[in-house]
Amino acid sequence: MRRVTGKRQVLTEYVGRPTASFVAEGADKPATGAEYSTVTVDIKKIASTIMYTEELIEDAQTDPTVLVNQDVRAAFAELIDQHALGRDRNGAITSQFNSTLASTTSTVEYDQTKQDAMALAVSSAMETISRNGYNPNGLILAADAQSTLRAARDGFGRPLYTDGFQAAPATLYGMNITSTTNLQSVAGTAGAGRVIGIVGDFDQSLMAVRNDIRVKFSDQATVNVGGTDHRLWQQNKVASLWECRVGFVAHDVNRAFVAIVNAS
Image (cartoon, rainbow, N blue to C red; front, side, top):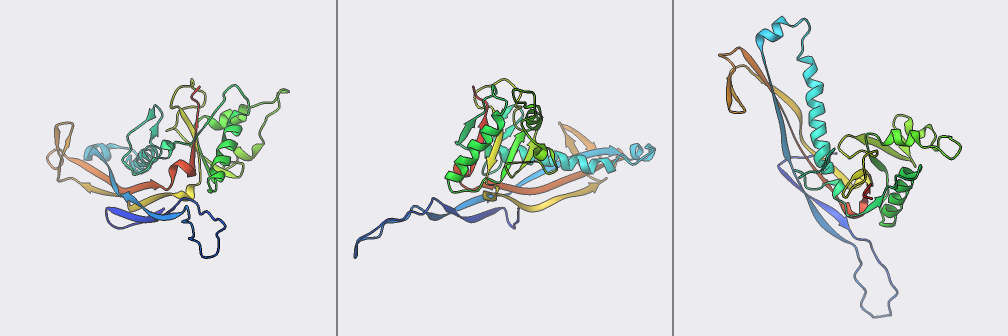
């Protein structure tokens, strides 16, 4: 995560891998396979407005507005998660961010006929990332993936996995596991483009924050909702406006991240 100013940040990135070779005395030296380039992060605004009447608050036994804060933050987090992944629970979406993790062209197949299918897929993805010169250090899985790991048994009915992945924070092969509802379920029917996990070097991803979530209140404005004007002062209403400004980008997404797919 990085604090930024302005609506767009251009960052220097390192791409490719160096190569070396023997050369004769006085001969031309070959150009390396690595170079410096740039990556752009565009800052996007996220907003939500909530309205209520003054009477509703006055008549409540407990202040319901205290519940709004955590719910709005959860809604913002869900939206950011969707657009950084480029997915929701139904499949691919059009992201507002510069990069999406699930768009990586590097994939491994999850073989749901095997009890240890998830571990095999994760291990294969880690190998690919390491071979590309990156360090696999994080794992994003569909919400039901950890229950799939807990249910895995050997031929004698014994659990295949120890408690390591169930602890907080959960880990597998030394990588932290994060669950999300924005990848399609492990238990669902296999199908083309069905992404159930992302393994990656998350040092290669950046969340750029221009403004944290902030809230403003008004009882004077007119707020249009679906074509209907709510005249706050005249109708004894209050509106709370929540906003934040963030961006997301991933460096070398096709080599630093691998999608676990259940396509067949």
